[in-house]
Image (cartoon, rainbow, N blue to C red; front, top):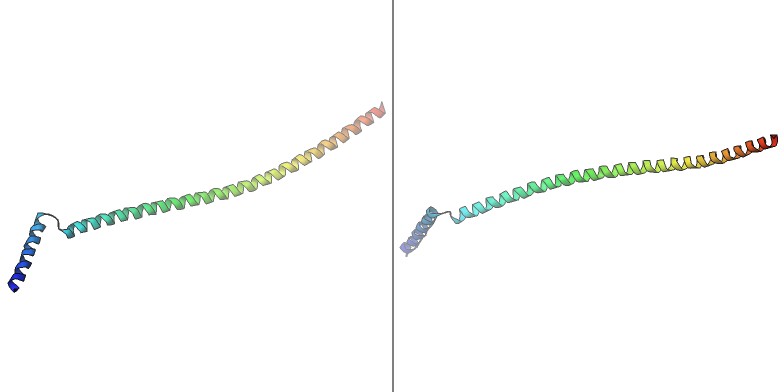
Length: 112
């Protein structure tokens, strides 16, 4: 019996050696697939990092635009307030001028 077991083992080793010499073994193929998968994973990680960097830059730009918008809105509010104050002052001046003109006309009319 021991001869049979050793003979079977020898036959398997011979078959394995023949397969190894005729082409890549299952382990070599698995190693190649693993290496390809690791390369793909590394590429995906790099793309994700680039995407995250781009996302961070975009978020910073959006934040900057938001700050600019707030500043401009504040300036616009101030300009609207000043504009309304000028319009009110303009109306007051126009009314005073009308009163002054009427007064001058009545003085001239009385003097004639």
